[in-house]
Image (tube, rainbow, N blue to C red; front, side, top):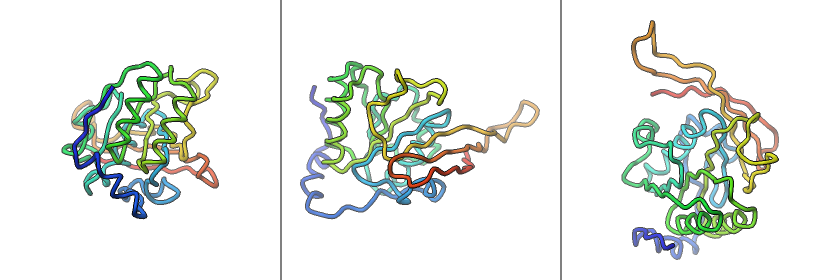
Length: 215
């Protein structure tokens, strides 16, 4: 399967490989969640829980506004309106619907990595460890960032034996604590308080934060 991407994106890495690239910037609201205060190129962030998709979009918003391209791969429940609410630049956002088989999925994602700076992906249960390893190697080579969205809870993991095929550098577990904005059944949701636990192999010590998201 061959994925066609804009010509300017297809050549971006041949130019960037000769430079020392900076991290991707994130908004002030989520900067405290990341050990390097930004998205480090070549790394994987895994977002879990009921606010995983919202958090993934928030992590990508600032970089997309500054010119980075975002590929959304296989995240069927992610909508355009949600992306707008979280500040993502839609003119630099592309949706990709890959096959579910392990090899075809990994081939598609590798092609997206070649052309995009940021990826938000949903990982199929069928993905093998060896195919995941090939994707992760390509990600590190191309210096892109992949954000995995996993809406399962800690007590109900998506993968058998709770073993995920990817080794995430940062893991963000989300739990919604409260919503505000609706009174007596009327009005609009305006704020959401989310508890986020930060862990992962790039995190020296597990941390917990309470983040307020405005809509």
